[in-house]
Image (cartoon, rainbow, N blue to C red; front, side, top):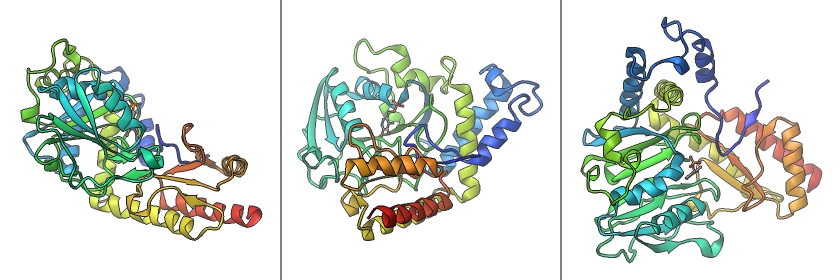
Amino acid sequence: MRVYNFSAGPAVLPEEVLKEAADEMLDYNGTGMSVMEMSHRSKAYDDIIKTAEKDIRDLMNIPDNYKVLFLQGGASQQFAAVPMNLMKNKKAAYIITGQWAKKAFQEAKLYGEAVDIASSADKTFSYIPDCSDLDIPEDADYVYICENNTIYGTKFKTLPNTKGKTLVADVSSCFLSEPVDVTKYGVIYGGVQKNVGPAGVVIAIIREDLITDDVLPGTPTMLKWKTQADNDSLYNTPPCYGIYICGKVFKWIKKMGGLEAMKAHNEKKAKILYDFLDQSKLFKGTVRPEDRSLMNVPFVTGNEELDAKFVKEAKAAGFENLKGHRTVGGMRASIYNAMPIEGVEKLVAFMKKFEEENG
Ligand SMILES: *Cc1c(COP(=O)(O)O)cnc(C)c1O
């Protein structure tokens, strides 16, 4: 039996995709082998990666002057790759809205001067700071954000005013959850294991003029975006199987109606949960309402023992991975694209019952 999996990542994937992959496990499309066993230089694999790229371009409406790279090393590796590739003036501006932004900021400090231009650390990252008129250094090479904060459950609803500087965004936990205007960014990247596929793949969408040989001295060949761009993500062996699953997820999203439909689906699910939290006498959302994420919903009872009891009883009832991040406690329901509405409805019914029994 499958459970309702509210994990923040690796996370729930569409059942249809998993079944299709299972059907093709021993013999992919008449090749007589699994995609796992296939040369990344084969015709069959070339079709898989090219189709995946075409489908994500269609879904996100990615302009021709942006490259799509399929990389490894997790989002965390890009924390270093971003400054290595972009810090021409050795200066960059970071907006600190949670742990992932902070990690990226700290990593950038290894390579140049990273400046913290705004932060929501004063209130445990429970909101997104006003970024309409920030003090951005004149010679900053880029402005960096983590667009959806997986741990704290906040999301930038409007992008910062970068005053003409290149915007770099880590979108790991909101990738393909709603339409985006790619032209507003220089770099969009994310690990796919939150909302798109299995761990092991990072997708980076990068404006072509930012892909150059002018990188910091000592940048490893593998971390230079140009190496990957010049070789269509096949400089070395890519995470073949993971990319294949991502490709299936792209097809699934297209079939569901694309990113507009995904957004409607995600808003509907999030509303069910937030509406319940807003009227509950026991459970409370932790994020300022206007900054709430559609993907990650943290909540608490205000009593640690009761939180633990809830997580335990929820697990026994088939709702998995509701424990909050180890650094913040409480609960967190991650309700990515592949979480069905029914999963959220049943979770809310369970929370109501828990409230009646423990309120
Ligand atoms: C999970 C996560 C990361 C880290 O991803 P890895 O692939 O484990 O390196 C970075 N940023 C965000 C927003 C995340 O949610």
